[in-house]
Length: 171
Length: 396
Image (tube, rainbow over all chains, first blue to last red; front, side, top):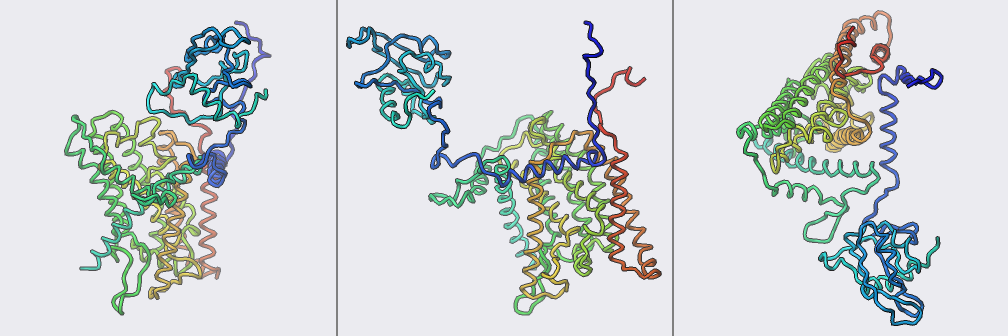
């Protein structure tokens, strides 16, 4: 390979100087940094009494919910876009003929394995009717693996619990 | 006969408690420096009172006691048990001569109570150094008996470090011993208290050498190559668990205390503080207790500095650390010894002849030597040091 002399830039190690050789700048910098942090604002909180304030809940990616429309029905039209987009394959949908006249299909079964989910938000991105959304609930626990598979009823319950705190999409 | 036993019991209780709480303090300081909150949950057992985490040492102690003390089948059993015992005994025995204050007036007009388990030992400093050398055996035996490569390497590195830094440690105090004219802690104390001139002021070079060597001797972070967590899995105590591990950890904390006490006693005037504690050898209860408070406060400050320093500076490379001991600190210590001896021989004579103030000129002499020697060191040491193995053609 032909490298022209002009393109090569020689970088020299900076001179340390007398104090530098004695580690003085290094030591003072380290000590001042440590002491500054000793008295600085703490970033952690005393969970669970104090909860982390989530700066923008509308874009936080926590537990999922299934939105209801204005008549209280599930918004989902069982188009499978979320299940297709999901990189972790954690969404399981069984579609059925819709009982309502305004759409063809609705999800007879809609379950998300919350243990398998990687909370990437791709389902929310993919959904054409804004039926699936991620809420700011981040501390999800359950007594068994089976109970961590959230079905339609549970996901709708999450909507009922969070619809006030997480307003409509703002992006 | 009763008095030493009472003192021993009190000292043991206080020391174990202090060691436990130092671990808590260390965790707090570590957490605060990393912008965390640190242990804050454990309070009084069986209640919901938290006390901001002050019960944590108790929980830690109980945990270490009831953990399974697992002895691997391939260890040399006798030496494996001996290692922690030697370290702990040596660390604890050192406190026999370390004073925790000056004296308290006797109860009911009795003899004054010296606040040290073994008062008036003429070779106090030698005793401390002897026992701190014995601690090296604990490290070596523990590392060797573990029959584990990581443990062995950690033990070897630690032994090399401790033995190397004992030289500058000794050289650093020689100036103090020379000027005070004694190895007794009490005499060194009174020498500083009566002149009001702490040795850190008059012998800065000796203090620097001693301080750096003491840092290394306590095996804390800029010098913790023996148990570099990221490289050596925990050093010589890799194979230890349960109570034996606790003994090792507690003796490390004791080493930190010993080093802090030595720094304060030898260079920061011990229990003396200008205008508060006085300097006479007869004390009232107030001054006696005040001296205890001053001494322990100073020790606390030095210990805090050690704790903060742990999170301030990166670890030395092994060859850098060895070079620092043998190529920098030992020559500096020797120069300091010669300079102090020179001044001690000729300073008073010149002071009498030309009529200047001896203490002032002692300080000036000390700092002049310090500035010249440190400047020379900075000028002479290389910009970088390289410990990579060299190829044949590099030599030509």
